[in-house]
Length: 145
Image (cartoon, rainbow, N blue to C red):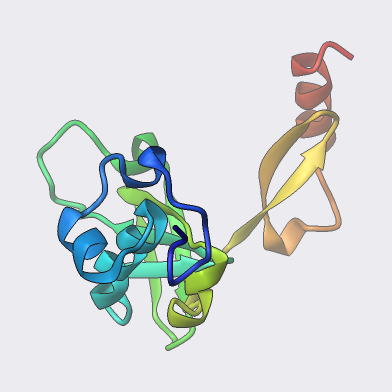
């Protein structure tokens, strides 16, 4: 039996932790049940979809000691012109190919990943051609070079 949405072969592992109702109603695998459940989040001003990955902006005033990405600061530029700075960003996962058309990118970060040595680092986009020597030295040291 195959998932009618993505074509994945359905086995016991396809359903672990998934929304039983969606599986029964739609016969879908876990991945498709997950993205079907998240479909109403599209258009929510606290949801950023960047390079096919969903992120949710948490409450900056939340008293919990737990913050997305350990409280690191992120600047998100939304395609509607908003610029949001947050220290409470949560990753919702990479959107599967079968669902990408329903979850279009709506934002971008002020940084990008760059490979330095054997590791990937985040660097600001405005410095994308110029990586500081100190960062290269740190990457090489971390990689045992």
